[in-house]
Image: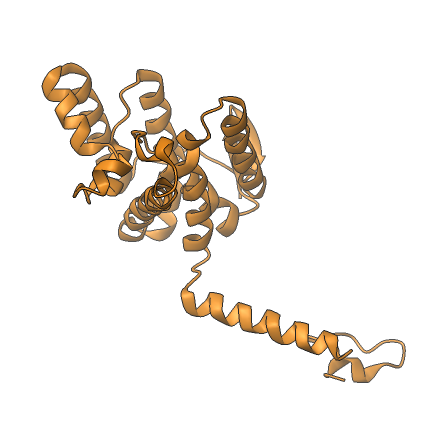
Length: 237
């Protein structure tokens, strides 16, 4: 699958329009804009005092023009392709879910960190990280552009994680990038359709394998060719 410029799909248009409108209004309304930003941004300290909607709204606020430009560009190039594949309802749910999970996981860190608790989070970078993770999990051979360089989607997962960690280390403000890091992880889980039941099943399989290996037994999954006169290798022995 080769990367192409996708059309403006319905979900992308609505999300982009709301992001553009909120960001411009906050920038031009002065004191009223500042009050609006307080209602939209995710501030862990405010969330604990009743601002429960902010994990769903902070992705709409990008007050910096350059940040807003890249936010809309990323939403279009990544989101439209996935919306065409998934349909609008699943895409919109995924976009909000990865952003919200990134914020909520950050809120858990805020319970033990004053720096996280008092930091204001905004921007759709956590959701964009989730979209990158979806490409890496579902379409690993697809090509997407990283600063105008075509890169296979499967490599974007470690690249995105590495860039985020690098910013956390070099800017000496690790708390500012927590939603992006958690959004990337949420994207992997949701794109792979990981459910609590599936995770529990994988844990049980790992535990059974470990017990069998301790007993010097071997588990062979699937069909293996009969070679070397060891036909019994197809079975547990």
